[in-house]
Length: 124
Image (tube, rainbow, N blue to C red; front, side, top):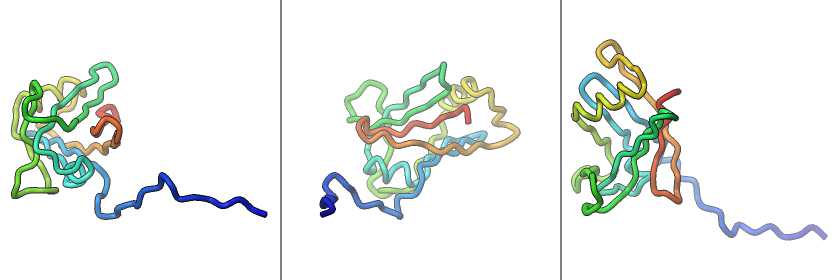
């Protein structure tokens, strides 16, 4: 007799969530709606950089966390989130060597469920 298989621990795959994507242009950094959705439409996040590995992460936090920034707005739940912050753009350009005046870049992210974060490999 063949043993029974259990679905315990399985989760339903949501096709509507999509793939987390980061777009970097000359004047803006945009997180696709899938980033917000996969993180549960957080109100605040922090940005983290791994300079040696050329990675950037966005992690959910509360508003009292040092360096927390507003991410999702009440009227933009689950939508694209755009930052027009020259410091953030300069940091990304410094890490990657990208020339943001000449072209834009698109990077796919990986969800780290246990960390409530998405990591973007800027070296790709």
